[in-house]
Image 1 (cartoon, rainbow, N blue to C red):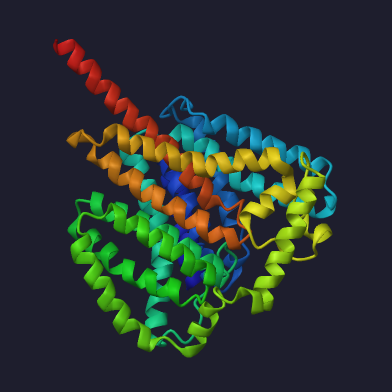
Image 2 (image 1 turned 135 degrees about the vertical axis):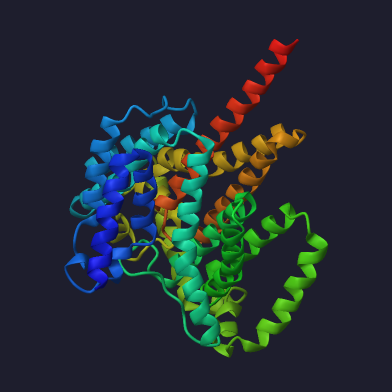
Length: 412
């Protein structure tokens, strides 16, 4: 029965994609983050649903005229240059048998973003893309949060199988990235039912992140929480509520959870933490000895025989300093761009939506930047979704500002 519903959903997604190709961007996000076919039991488990949907999406893309020119933004050429640099480092990778499959995997992640930039050509469509990503991750996280509360936080919560965030650590970071997006959609929607649904999911997402037992997620939660609190208009109400929730929740957390979190302070006594530090040293040392090429994809197989456990070390050790600079510019440059956009529009009441969107997207970037300092997720599609959503937000905001200025000039 599950296979039938997954097949029905796939057929419906293909039909809607041919009807309105921009919806294909949303459906690809659903299959990427929610991964519904992983919950099937029969043939649909291994059926190439994403590939089939993507092929249909590409056909629909070339059939439609509803496209916009590629936005003029520095991040787009940087993204393509970085992608090309990955090809270069793969050509001379130290473990080519592992590097080439990884390049193909990363290219499959990157390719749909080209079409996203052409098809998401209105603010409304961009909102629906953000909503789709938030709901796809938020639904799974809320489900995990219910399990966490029901089990008294005594078991770790994991992500859906066969996804990029199936592990407990990855799942926690994805959940924390999704929380600001849920807040963004909750503020923007006019549907009271949707608003209340998203509002109920947010504490469940927090419960799921806590019950992942991830130390990196705890640090990311702290950083993201501070950013969200900074942007809140109701600090005097929220802070006491958080204190009450903390007082109520702490006694229910198992001792094992506290013991694991306490190793953040005593990392020099924790074998896992010491192992990560050793891997980071190896990766950084290799990058200095091969500053322009790195080791190539999956270079950890040669350099340290252990996973990098850090997106920053991963991109640096595998591709060198030039690739690291481009990758870091996409991450931190987008955060700076969002900040500048907030400053530019802060005194215009008609553009309050820009401040809301930019502040929440920036909070999601913070969750990624802090959380993946301890996880090798530099090729994660959620990062590039955030980057290009930020590109489109800037475009639509500046278009609206320019239109207002033109209207004012014409009125004079």
